[in-house]
Image 1 (cartoon, rainbow, N blue to C red):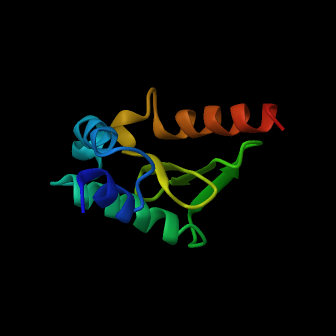
Image 2 (image 1 turned 60 degrees about the horizontal axis):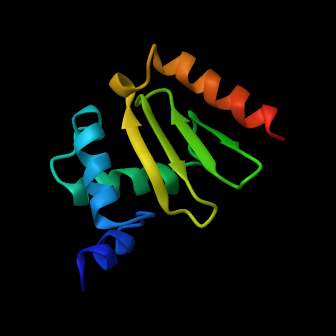
Length: 111
């Protein structure tokens, strides 16, 4: 299995290099020690999207955006569940709530 196949097997949408870029940008904020752990944590949020406290908005293109206020985590996923990005509160400027509100407004304006 090559690196790109490996990243896809973890539920990542994109190349291995793309996964590494996101890992380096957001791993500290989500407490991930490896690209694999980062991708798996992102998938855990997606799989737990029906749990209490996880808010969801789907835009016109079918992109699913999730926000877990309790954990302070945000993820964006394709309609097939593959991860586009995943980040923690420190990456959501100016604050997690304001970041999420902006995401929701943008998605609703495109409907």
